[in-house]
Image (cartoon, rainbow, N blue to C red):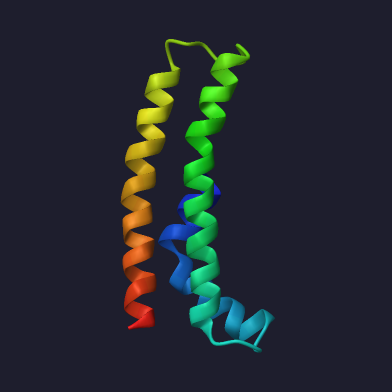
Length: 91
């Protein structure tokens, strides 16, 4: 969740950082798109993992809906922001 949030919220800054300091081969828009897709995938996988952990009894069933609701609210907000920023970059 923390990595997905960092990639989603700070994807624009990370794209500029990667372009300037690590790999100057592609425009930063491609790095931002990669960070956005990774963030979205992590947010989609996290509730699934919480559900599977509940099924194998690794986490308590009473907290699972709270986890999934929390992941969903945070994931939707951050994902909407990162997709909006990525769409604005693409024009």
